[in-house]
Image (cartoon, rainbow, N blue to C red; front, side, top):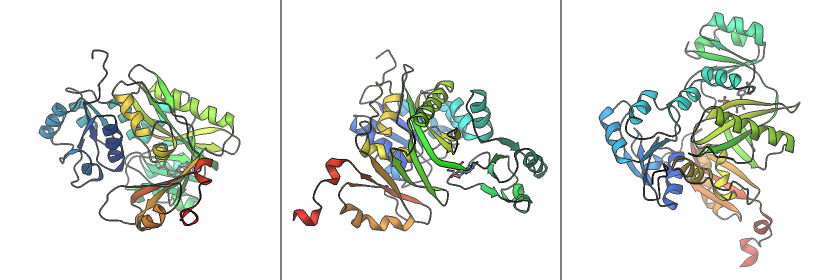
Amino acid sequence: MNDGTLPPGSTIGILGGGQLGRMLAIAAARLGYRCHIFEPQIDCPASHVAQHTAAGYDDTAALDAFAQSVDVVTLEFENVPIAAVQRLVKTVPVRPGATALAIAQDRVTEKSFLNKAGIETAPWAAVQSQSDLDAALQNIGLPGVLKTARLGYDGKGQATLQSATDAMGAHEKLGSVPCVLEGFVDFALEISVLAARGLDGSIACFEPVENIHRDHILHRTLVPARIDATVAQRATQIATQTIEALDYIGLLAVEMFVCRDGRVLVNEMAPRPHNSGHWSIDGAATCQFEQTVRAICGLPLGDTTRISDCEMRNLIGDEVNDWREILAQPGARLHLYGKAESRPGRKMGHVTTLHSPAITARPSKSQSQ
Ligand code: AMP
């Protein structure tokens, strides 16, 4: 097809082989696509369901062979070296592309980009040294959150600064790497919006969902979010504006704080499927993974309507051992990632509980026997 559509039967390359890659490959297979994962780690979750090249992102021969074997490349891990993407793009389209990826990889470029596009964030300052931090604290004040500019996730590479004592030596404690200081947002709740943009520029957003964190890791996602229509509309508009400003193809997650006065601030974005979109596998007309496939392959974007109210809960570490009890609960949909070893803080699976009246009205198993 000459309009750029990659029809079913094509092969999707995925950079990164974690659970997001696994669920993406499963959704792609449903639509008749093949997937080929590029991920250094052997026996990664996605390798159980797709072809796998186990090589480093600096292995140019492996990257070239991978590029030859696929029709389009996407990613499930945003910290892929830009040089690898720039190499792939000489042979095969990469969606989202290197520019969006580079912006999302660094909190300084990300916040500069957002603010330039007219999107509000917490007050922030780039911090290269302890004296930068001391100066930034004069402007932004305490409490604040100091974050490494790159490679932070699930609260790693972050320090909350409540007092001048906390601030002392804080830059060195984070490894003396480039950081940002953010003002602490006393938010009412946290939400995210997942937006997709197709090859033809069409955009579809999932509704805002509410995210509850525990120990800096996403614990639960509530759908719908407990916000009013004005906030929901504002959040959706922010995600739309962001994906357009990035000239983005694929799925983008935008995490936001809802302030007590109703303002919506962007915290960060992720250029890939997102943990807060897992509910959509069971709770929406089209799931975030299928939507990613549709966007990057030039298919029409899918209907994002919620078909059931639901709650997604991550199974972290040993919580995965509850799989038997979860399977016995009506309305509970279990997803396990095939990770051999559970460790504290490791995402092992998730469970989505559907609250549709059709499900909750069903007699429980013991009643029906
Ligand atoms: P992040 O890695 O930026 O997504 O931060 C992880 C979590 O830390 C967020 O989901 C919030 O719960 C909390 N957090 C991050 N930045 C701030 C901030 N500036 N003010 C208040 N809480 C924050």
